[in-house]
Length: 216
Image (tube, rainbow, N blue to C red):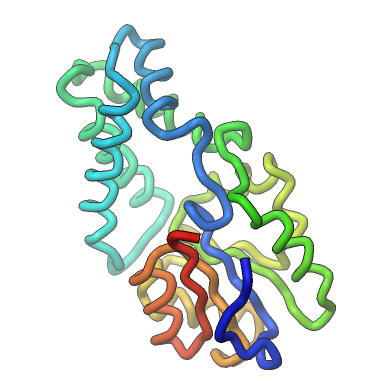
């Protein structure tokens, strides 16, 4: 990916969103959901689950930023996503067990793949001595396991996760927390992400440079 319209002479820290920027589920959310449901005796077509997931996630994510985020709020968020996706086929008494298994599955590196071009980009910019790389993602602590499982953690000086810093994009507090931890002013940051509101517009509002990856 080319960094177009970026004044790289000012950049000291590059931050990357995780989901749909650095990595994506493999072989796909619908397929993984269908696989786990099948273990519990519930049959739903992967394409149906994929469609439901995209609709539910978009609706629930639109409520962001929330005043406070934590591991507890993230488990609650994903429990609601799963419940909406597997209803009505999955009986209520099975939903809890299905959620717990899915929660663990998506913490595994093997359930994710690195997006095209990102490995090369990380190698290129990690080699630049005056630039540090970091992750800034609306996620929970499972992201640490995912990055380790994909051998990506070694590229990043820091990994900033909303559930751990207590604020999520597009909340300005998320960006200010990163600035404080990295010891750099806003103009020294470049954020790369796939979401127009949460990544590009929010980063620009924080005084950062930004690149939107959607469609690339």
